[in-house]
Image (cartoon, rainbow, N blue to C red; front, side, top):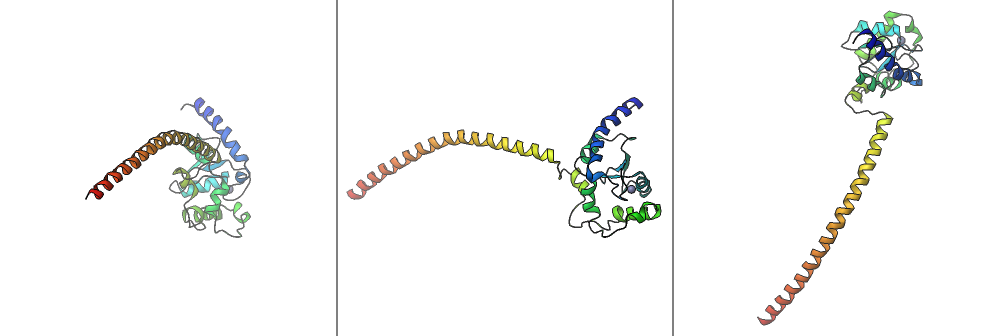
Length: 203
Ligand SMILES: [Zn+2]
C-alpha cells in the first residue's frame, strides 16, 4: 500500500470509526476514563487515550495490540469486530469486579497507569470469571451486531415461510396418497376378514 492508498484507506475507516467514537459507550478512554480516545487495542476491542496507548505498548503485543484510529490502517476484519463491541461491553467483562476505583489518581501517573492496565488485562484481576472476554467471542463469531441479528431473523422467517409452503405442497400430495392407501388397506382388510370368516365357517 503506497502513501496515497494509505491516506484513502484511513479516510474510509474514519467514516466508520468516527461513528463508533460518537457512541456514549466510547466517549471515554476504556482505561483511565479521560475523554475522546483516539487509539485502540484491536485484540481487546477498546478505545483508549494516547497516554494509555503508550502504556499498552510497554506491556507488549502478547497482551494488547495497539493501533491509532487516524494514523494506522485497520484491517477490515478488525473494523467489523469493533462494530460489535464498545468500551462499556468490554469493561463489563474486564472491570466486572472493580469497585470504587479512583481513576483520577492514575490519570497523571504513568507508573500507576501501567500497573492498572497490567492488572486489568494481563493478570485479569477484575474479570467476570463466569465468561470469556467479549472480543474473543466476537472473533469466534459468537456475538453479533444488532444489524446482523435482524438480517438473520428476517432470513429465518423467510426460510420458515418457504419451508412451510413447501411442506404444505408436499404434505398435500402425501396426504392424498396416504389417505388413498389407507382406504385401500381398509378395503383389503374387510375383504380378508370376509374370506377368513368364510374359511372359519367352512372349517
Ligand atoms: Zn487513558
